[in-house]
Image (cartoon, rainbow, N blue to C red; front, side, top):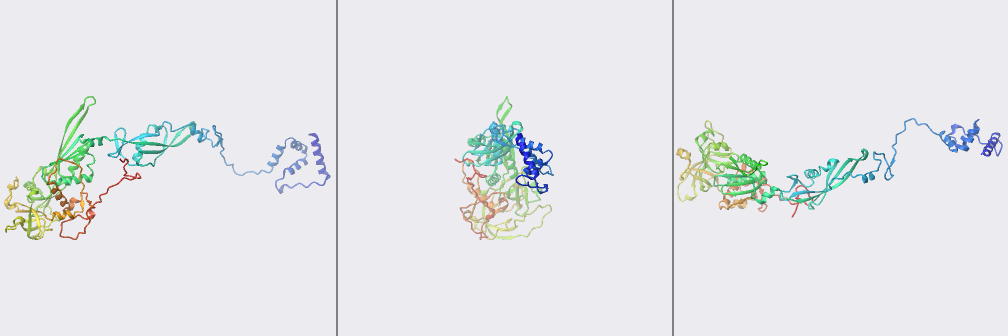
Length: 576
């Protein structure tokens, strides 16, 4: 070591005296850039403490090199940007950002399973008849595939197990609609070791099992019911019932019925609960003039739980007045309606009874409460209609209203006509009458009406009337060729599925009368769903003098929705 120091001193002396193999190169000035390690060493050797630095270089060359490098460093004007270092996973040693658990995600999932305790399979009960799902404990709800309602139902079945985690996202995974499988993709979070939050995605599979609901059980049994609505009308004609049937179909009130039974003078609707029957009664009272009463019978009684089981019966009686009936009002009722004539014609029955005076065109409406306070009956039955031929007809100008007279119809025209029965064409006997059908009748037309001269009126109010105030003939409606009307009828109606005790030969004729009333009365037609009959071609309506027809714009297409293979909204969940 001492020998090396002496050798370096000799080299230094030779450089100082310019001896040796030549003069030493001059030192590089500081302004020419950072000095090299050798130049820095040469300056240190030329200083008074060169012996100290030489010894330091020989003993610790790293320190001298670090000092030479520090001479070249530059100072930073701004603060240093903080940088986050990585740590090693305590399980596998992989560099990871620091976290409270000091473990990577893979090791953390291997150590902790946040979905533990959450069932990965479940069961849903589905009723094929009504296409509803069971929501425990005993509620059946209507859900379509991949709907919010069905997703909520599936999550409610896992509500207890999901209480320990935080649900982030939930959605359906597509499955074949007929596979009886539903798959849910759930995303949950949970706090694990030392406050670290772990997020995990997993799939829950539900198996759809078939189970018939209680309502469908009762429908199939056809004898088990808790409430019945008995609708009655004491009349021979069923026009009001046909109209009521279409209203029920339009508002879909028949869907909750267990059974519909048709009897001679009405219909019986059977229900599984009293509330559904009460809803039907309220609907009937709003659509047709009627009155109702109810009763109940005790079936069983549990003395321990104080539970009573009743069967309720609702009786609804519809007023015995139908369209095209001739009625005789009481004097008091006729006076309260604007001093109209006691002999009137019923032109329509909706929520009220619509009457018209054929001699003055005065109209009036009678609701159910007014009728039951002042009841009246029909003077004739539909079978007593006779056919007349118009011999002569004259339109009458509008008559001056009397004091206290009510409103008059703007859709009818008052006329005076001479008519003759088609059964008495070989005689010269004619009848004079006033009619409200002056806008559609012409000489030579056939018209249906009632003969009041040759009949025996068995009515309380008609027998007390002055015979001069009773007309000879009351014309009801114009007569058309029925067979031709049936051939040209390109529309149809839907019917209720009901049990019939027996078929009456007169039912078909009454149903055809109802269809003709729909064609002639636009006001009734607005409340009925009329469907186009695709089997009959559409004909251009060029016959202005023919019977009235329903336009194509008023008809609905009779759609038959088939099953959707993609499981879209409206698709059936099950197939046979």
